[in-house]
Amino acid sequence: MRKIAIDARMLNHSGIGKYLKTILGHLVNEKQIALSLLVYKEQIGFFGSGPDYIVVKSSIYSIQEQLELFLKIPRCDVFWSPHFNIPLLPLKCLTRVVTIHDTYHLRFLNELSLLKRIYSKLFYKMAVMKSDHIITVSQWSKSEIIKYTGCKKEVKKIYNGGPQYQKNNGTVKKQLLFVGNIKPHKNIDNAIKAFINIKNNNPSLGDYKFIIVGNLDNDKYGMKITNMCKTRNDVVLTGRVNDQTLLDLYSTSEWFIMPSIYEGFGLPVLESFSKGLPVLSSNAASIPEVGGKAVIYFNPNSVDDIGEKMMDAINRPEIRDSLIEKGKERLKLFTWDKTIKAHKNILLGIGKHEDKNISIG
Image (tube, rainbow, N blue to C red; front, side, top):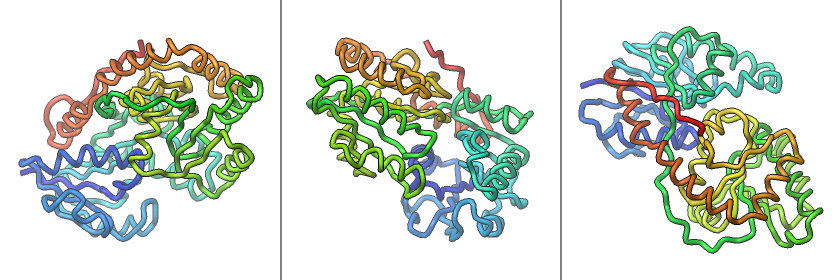
């Protein structure tokens, strides 16, 4: 019986939470694993009665978590940190595993506060130094980790999986959809500018709408987006929505747009493929690695190019039908079964660990 302890506190986060829920949902049923999960009190029982739940009170990234993790992580064969906020103090484990999803905090270091800059530089460096296995989610992120940390160890690329394809039976409306956290690197401001431009220059678009789903923080960027939209009826900020509402939006939208300038993977692309929703996307970072030729790409720094690609997509319905089929085929390359098997191999110390590169073409 292999004793494995995992920091599962980010279960309720959007991207990492989905990653954790999917992998842990399978690990809890493995008979050769004795699983201990570090969780917040409200997360006890999330995976039933199988795992040993260890309650942690400290918040992620806090100084307090370092002492609490040191005291509460049990003696084990493997400890897995699913994010770069690893425990710095020595642990009673034989092997340490970390997943570094991206290097956002290093890539945009100058945009962070002084404290966050110090934290990010220290913890990325220590995550690489202290871990026996380093996992990431794309070839792009692998190259970024090596670039920004100088990592000499093997970085194991394991692609995320995507949802299974579901035929879209909804009545398609004239609307463009974005789903994600509304942060500066998501570049939603340029997408809004492009949409407003094409609406102003093309009266035939009439009641076409841009639906923006996701958390909007009360910070400088959040206020900028709010101010851009407050006088318009055709750019709709929904905030977070429940699962059924989100499914309805995927089913009834004409296009999905992903204007990000930085992504470690790009899971929303696969989620859109799975709903039969064609994708317009930035050509930056890892997104072409995930989307391949099943996506219409634009330069995320050019409002004009974003607008041109929007108009091209809206005016040519035959492209939409073709991309739905290409997306359906592309989705087959990214399965959670493969993702789970590769992680399990690392945690159990067996078999093949890394995915082969997936062709963009």
